[in-house]
Length: 207
Image (cartoon, rainbow, N blue to C red; front, top):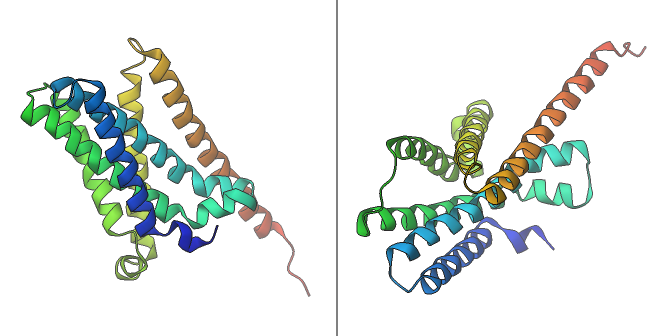
């Protein structure tokens, strides 16, 4: 598959189509335009966006630890995967707002505040996921934005699924394990880079 076969526009279109299909299926499975349908649509699109996020968040670490093959392919398309996450999570937001504003579903203030902060980063990262933004912000500030955003979003997902462990361990435990594995891969990749850097500094100068 060429890079153009999974370009950002195609990734956004595919993710949007999948997310809208999930929304439609959730409403149909819960009696149509109902409170339960909106809530199910919000839950299922959140899970779909989580999978996109974990894939994008793990791409760099996987490619550093095991270069080549599908890991390098994934790294080269990380921007597309990240935009697919943003598209899916935007549809999740629409489903969630539908459940809250149109059907009166209650939600905790912590969820609103945390989710709001998360979406600030989601949209900021999506808007700046292009070469022009890298040049405008500078590589250092651009990387800081995306690195910080990644950790904030990971933390929000961790908090969300941790709360589901007591009453729905079949969902909470696998999701937390997947997120923990992604975090572990990032730590291992960071440690590997530090070791390589120290090894390079200790190499004697050639004459």
